[in-house]
Image (cartoon, rainbow, N blue to C red):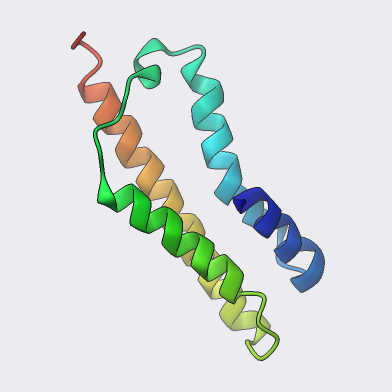
Length: 102
């Protein structure tokens, strides 16, 4: 869904291609887990991840509203990208800290 929304923002709103970092983070994480064993471990249940994912999707949907200025949409997109990247970095650090456990 995020890839579809990012593509729509890129094509319809003329947002910078940097918007593709939002879905790209997930694909890099999944691809890396094939080569780095400890990334393939289960993450503990987290409301934080659910709220961040839902919030970013909500912001990406809101960004399609016609009455929002391009500047505001750009700022919302940049904030969403930063939040997603920080979330994935936190999860990688969490998994790295647990890498020695079975």
